Image (tube, rainbow over all chains, first blue to last red; front, side, top):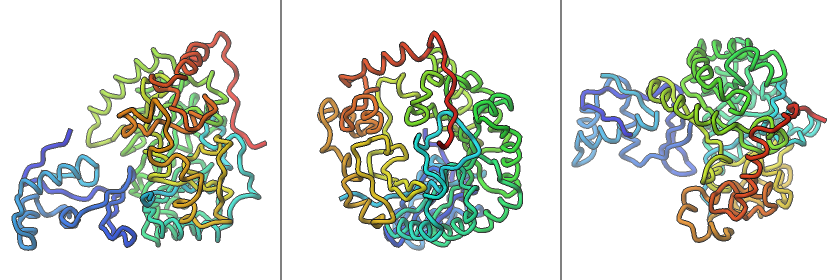
Length: 92
Length: 359
């Protein structure tokens, strides 16, 4: 069951989760006790903005400067999947 | 071509203060004088990272018994790996943990044998309970995430609620409740360990309710008792697919139990590189993908789900490592498992547990 994440929710990388770049796979990865997530470019940008201060809406705005057609709902969906994988927590 | 592995399970030593009768180490334990040197391990970590491994699980035996553990932690961390310390907690002082954390341990996995001091210490074979509780408090003080690992069996399954409460009290963020898998020591002690159907029927809903109640606070992972199931576990998510194990003597294994398959020629890091072993060795390619399968697996849609189950279990119970895992209800050998359940779940006379020790 994937949780629903509101646009004003503030995501933060969970304690014990490490974000890094893997030269071998040429991809950003998230490392956590349960495993490894290999991120695509968009997901990597979202993860880098899950800093505990920006809301989902803020992240969508920030990414809108960089990419075309960023929908806040899509960002919320991606954050929800990251919550489900226990990579990020949300406040608010 | 196989994909790169995500993780390395580094069994630094088979020495351990605990004597659990279901230990996942092989019955033939590697002695101290056959263990890899510090330099060997540093090279193994370099090779594992170059191969693509991003997680290094420092395990054993008890990894704290290696005096070079701080150096190994620092090196794994310098490579950018996620460093997981898998420990009994015995020997984990506050200073030792602080030092290891400063060198880059990212996460601690602490074993717990039972919910009570008496039960825990009986199963472990030594007084370890108080030291585990203390070790958990040090992990919490240090701000590291904690997983509590408990192996479930007939002797502790009735205490499932207590085990969950204990893990909560210890401040765990994750709890792994893994029913015993029967290889090596656990196979030897199966008639002492095999749970009854009533025990599993009781435990299931207790775990499900706790998963619900603790969602967001403590994740509970429940590993099934496969002898009682109709389908096998997706063992290792496929042979040579995601992780490799290096044993204390440098043997490189597709799974920690793989030495039970006596027909498998095992390679060693002293003689070959991890890269060559992962991609080119007969042992890692023996059961990769689907081509090795026979029916009923070969034509079964579930092969994409469970990969034919466990090769070690197939070998142990049927003598053919390429057979369908005999716990599967479609296996022609399922009757072997049913006979084991009938005779060993509630034996007329329960044998004594053979405690793990070096010979």
